[in-house]
Amino acid sequence: MNTLTTKYGKLYASTIAIFFTFSIFFGISTFYPEPDFDEIIGEQPIYPIKADNMSKEEALVFEEKLKEHRTAEDAWWERRVEEQEKYEGRALLFAAPICLLFMFFAFRYKEFPPPIRLGLFGGPVLTLLLKFIPYLGSVWAGARFLIAFAVFAILVITGTPSLRKKIKSVLKIK
Image: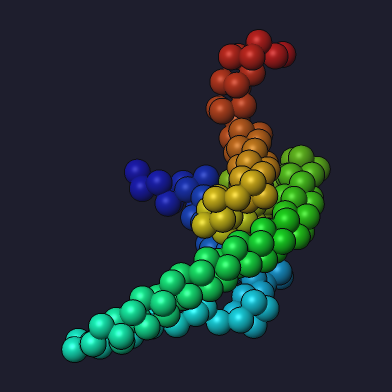
């Protein structure tokens, strides 16, 4: 029997469609766009161009320009990292309540079937989780990732009856 023709197969298919719809509207960049770092800290320093036939004096001047470029580029990247961390901290304060709100809705509206509940309330959380993956290099991003992952895992466990029973049996909860 085709799984898309069963009752839950249709629900899961519609859930996937809902998830992709939510992924368009509930990305972090939709509501909290990343700032233009080049506008804030200036453009990245341009690498000096080395000519093929340089005299010794020109080579010394090039080496000096190269040292200046490396110093300027290091300073630029330090400022870039500082601005990125500021943005990530503000995005964490923006995203964590959204994840918790959708978790509350998932527990509040238990009359929806598990696939619909997971699609409606887990879709935005999973989208936030996927949007955070590029930022895992910093402490703020790691915290955001863990919050979104924990919320999504709880939604999956509570939304899937067989997983809920298995977790209860492992934890010996009645």
